[in-house]
Length: 358
Image (cartoon, rainbow, N blue to C red; front, side, top):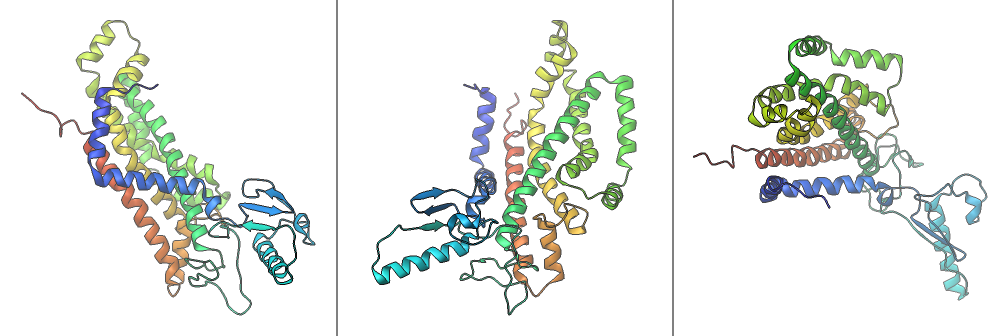
């Protein structure tokens, strides 16, 4: 079992005592959990199909052709049509009192995926919210379900921001701690590199790259990390300068500890409060950055689910209030919970707030 430091346990208890941040943390974890298992809630594939006494699980399984269930096509089964077919068969059997196997289909609460268009013969999208058609938040401008676009867009945004956070922190903490501890020419060299780096116009680079190639998920992570590691580098450099002059660092050096051991076993663990404090705000920054790029048209290529693309649709179609309203509400809930978590973490890990000087 992992044994936590008593000071860490005290900080966790302080965090739990800040109810606004603690409950926001639970809500945020719940949202991530829902997005991770989005296929169970929002999907055009059935969760379970019972046909002739056999059970099929298409959601996380392979494509099942329509001929398997009695249709006359080889491509993937239309499970909404299959559910209607089984319902009609059961109705006929009940009328004529015939015995037979009870075939059934269990669909997700929202039986659409993020890429499927649900068009009507007598109307043009976007369609308003409808309970009967199971578009509970309506559709976008091409007839795709809004809940599906929001949920899968959230999953992409949150994983993008978390991966970007890990990359930026890995680079920034490594270089920043080395700059602060080693100092000298190494420090001066990276100071000049960072000064030059910060003067490169980030948006212009994105525009140039997007005009040459279509950026995908990992390419955007690389581009954002290319310019995003410098903030954490400056912070860790400053903190390391202060920590390397403390008694425990001098004692470790006197005992013969190597520079690598001193940095990763002594200095970084003692700066963990600062690292953890910045993490929630970095996550919200990653979500906003991806949404902004998608809104401007330089982010993920269509038809990738994206909050930025939905914001653009809402701005272009102000009459379809459900598009802009749904995205703004989703962003408001997400960014508010992340901000509350960040404030609570900063307060719980602040040593000045819970220290007594004699």
